Image 1 (cartoon, rainbow, N blue to C red):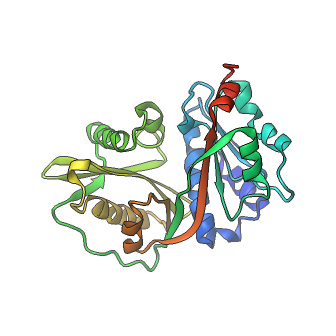
Image 2 (cartoon, helix red, strand yellow):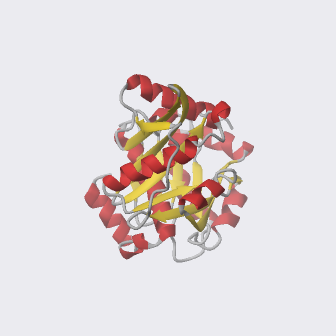
Length: 281
């Protein structure tokens, strides 16, 4: 999306001054990252005052198809949902639906359920103010740096896909092939130990795919990667860092200084809706 259009969308959604709100920072980081997928012309990012759509007609993977940030003053109806999903039905693509529980319009969750969507995760949103953040010490045992070449990029992608069980094709758009992302690689004794990716826009650093190779867990890999990436982004102009956390990783982020600020809920089509959207029935 062009910066002018993004700015207009944020103003129309009343977001101009709200980006100092940690919950808005987390949601904005996710929306900006999703929108960055449109670096590939095969993906369309369509933003309006009402919602953000990410549609990739050439791919069935829900890493490339989603609806985010629905905003409505009145209660949501089933007709509203079908209107939002109409482009996906037309392309025969199933889409994820992301919502922030404290900002979701009234009736959205109920209508999603009625339509045939099912919740699959409820991660907390967490944020960290970077301007006054004092980086803790890192382990000299772990090395972490932005990838320097294609070999390192592919190694980072491999860790992320292995840990999260992700399809390498779509995940490339979320990491090494996307010019909007900075990808970090961690090594121990020159062996690949972990990876993460971050996206920086408008002073907000969104952190994604923090992955540690199972054999190197509890060795300070994620800790060191996070600190190095946070320092790298702050030097590049980030004033806040934002992420959503798994239960396993939340303690790590709290220790680094992140605070819970909101709760997200991710929905995906149930079996029958999936068949309807993809044109199987």
